[in-house]
Image 1 (spheres, rainbow, N blue to C red):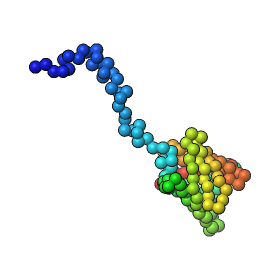
Image 2 (tube, helix red, strand yellow):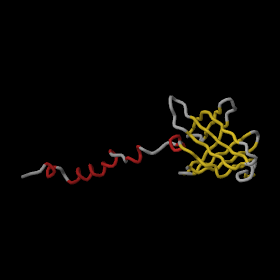
Image 3 (cartoon, rainbow, N blue to C red):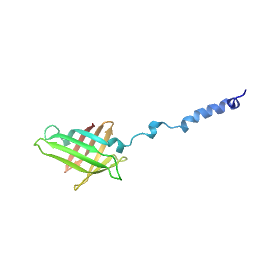
Image 4 (cartoon, rainbow, N blue to C red):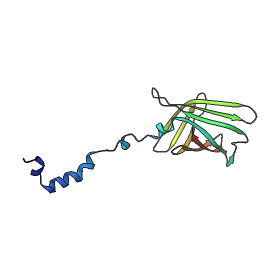
Length: 143
């Protein structure tokens, strides 16, 4: 009994085997999350620096930022800040991510747009930009 494989020359078979990885893809490649998807969730701000001074633990008692998934073309954020004098504020609005330029634009409701450069490494997010004329640097961990 002859099998079809016996009619294929060994060179053709080796060539076909060598090309097989070209025609297959890994599931990891297809499901690699985008920055926008990786941002979704709650982030605990560990460092809150203005002009090189870390206000976390002194002026800023607690701060979190939450990025929500995009719905109907809009992606929402909520940024909570609690101060040592007992005051707190929650800033809400929409955000946009430019993955190529590594920039997040926060568009607070009724406020000015805040453009922040980002560095995202797993569950650590660093945001830098200018806030009210001061250099802002936030370091956050995903909860």
